[in-house]
Image (cartoon, rainbow, N blue to C red; front, side, top):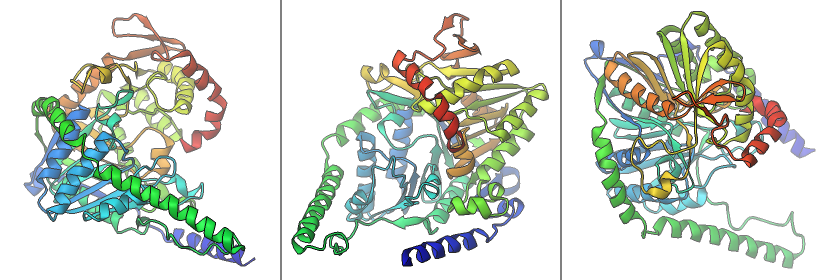
Length: 511
């Protein structure tokens, strides 16, 4: 009974907290951590930007920034994998922390994907790195609200955001599966806005300092017999010690780091050098607010406008900035009511829409593919030109080796181009998770035909190497030849996807 009263009080407190209304959108635009705009003609200060199309080049750019930092490095990611790229970046960060650089990291603590848990936080803490976690909630409702943001900022002056998490598959290093993705490097006021938004998350109560659980809790409630209590405690201590040891040993392993850096430098530097650094006359940085949860979604007035800032600005740009053609690139193409209305409105105005997304053969999510292949014939018939990735290496830029080239490839970029001088690069997927649950962010640029052309040229190369969906069960390549509608998927993949059709309908609100 006492436990029920406690749970009831917690629930009531959450409701009361949710009833505290956030500022409306117009006021929110003035809150610098979540919405920042810089017009060079007004401020006299420019934002420099560089498209990072290649994964391995984007990894090298991160290494460059880490080595360049003078005071502080701020990092936030949805995923940080326990692999070569993840270890390499930790080694670079440890070097800088030892030199007195303030290194702060926020990683999402989704129970389904987290690898850098509290044991790794403890392992890097001894070097001076403060690693914290976003939203440790275990209940199914609140656990849906993740940080999907991607940030690396140095000194509030230069930064990178975009689609890539930290892992071999995001940096063209994995020999089994890799992502075509895109990041953007920013130097100027937008980098400061990015760091300010990081600070807002860092100081929010939803971000917790990670620590290993107490190794000596009372087990009286579980085991009344003294011998059983000792046995239980010894087993628990043994497990905790093993996890501690494994995290420490992984962080301290050095065999792969130096040779990998040399190989990355050799391949990526020429790619990176060919990407122009250009000025953006009008730049906007936007981020969702931290701390969203199930109760706030239910009770906060204008929840979407107040917490889902990225969504609001994206829809504003689509509505007001789209020229003759709207170009969309997203790994998921899941159209809720708002998206259906927005795209239908653009089509009614006689404008074109081109979409680049995953095929069944290239996706990492069967349930998303099931919904995509259910809805896309209708949208193709309505006039949306849909390009799907064919699951193969696109051969635009070199990668680590031939085995990586032959791996399966998906696409993961989140990009929108509105006209010949306006675009968005960020973390937002076209799905319900980005619309309602995940905290998202991104950078908009207006007034730079050169930057827009650089982005659009690469987008066109990618989609032209893929397939065009003509109608149901019919796709062609750029030469007009019939190709596999499912993007070279295996029979097993097709069977799994079809078996997911009904479950994916039921799960669609969470996608």
